[in-house]
Image 1 (tube, helix red, strand yellow):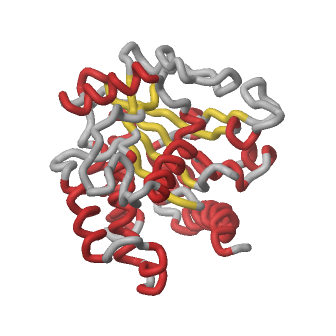
Image 2: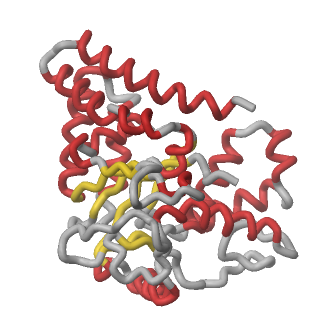
Length: 308
């Protein structure tokens, strides 16, 4: 089975900046073994599916059949991988990002709850009825209560399916891309889909500055909706975390939609940079040319959602 066709925007925080209860769960997770980033999507899918296959059926990960929680150790990714005993031979070589140990709790339970609320709000009644094992009002109430448990906090991961939200590329620079292809030493011949990676890592301060600057520019040139609104929302999310954090944009399972040549030739980050520079120079035609190239590239990936 292929990995989920999901991309990720992750925040890796210094372990010491996590609130007490979460820090305890993360330390327990690290003692159990940090999850290799190439396995994160598979792990999340497995946890969510097992919740649905339980007897009695549970609604969300980390939940007993009666709706109470198990409070087990948190699934966690490490930025540098130095203390990750579960890291598998052949996975991409980790690199240290600054002197601190940075961790990314996967926050699977609240993210699953938020996705469930979104499903209930957007999908047709016939699909909702076919997918749910409980009364819809009960499902919504339980999912919303889990989301509310975040309080003033936020999950460390946001994700999108089948395509990358184009404003996310504002946060990164093309030169920072890390590309691991099937023929690289980090890949294995029998499992290239899980070893191939495309990702960027940037300091929190840089990501925030780029998001704020681009949102202001887009708001003044194209209006406050659309990309400007996405970037303002993204900046608000990033401000929940410690200033010493790192932001990672990861294609995740979307690499399965592209062969090595396509990945190597991908200019998404360059196209966004070119479009923003053209807007600053008042060259709307050049900006639109870069945007169309970017939009068409990702449209060819996203259309596979409807193909069978």
